[in-house]
Length: 155
Image (cartoon, rainbow, N blue to C red; front, top):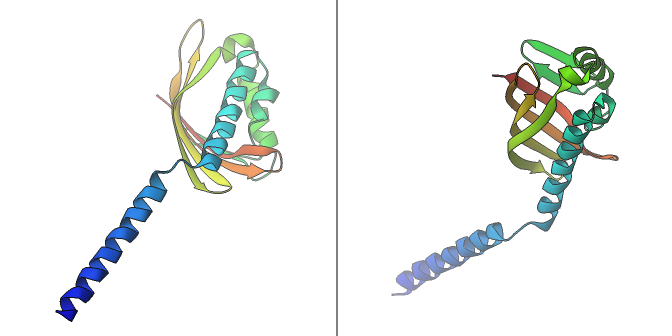
């Protein structure tokens, strides 16, 4: 009888611990919500800058670091300045830039200072509408959330 009581108590304790974990994980995380909103604001500022023809403003979403990386197609570009130079050369007119939209954004906080964003990009231009997918790694910096790694593909 004592043995059955012990196991029943142990099972009851385990049940309540699982219940507490389930309830705590379903509570909203205000800091996580603020972080996602801040990251979304960076992406919104990037698309607004792009759409007004401001490549430098678009690049403000990236960390100004030599370790910033952009992967596109079979090319790896390293360093904020090199990424900026690539964009400035490739998109040197409003016609080439078009209108940029981001969609299907999925945010994942990996820790207090790191996050990923998976999404789609789309350019609407007079002659074509290139589009594709991206995965971004964001890092919390002194300047706020910034992209440190951008892997973009075209469809």
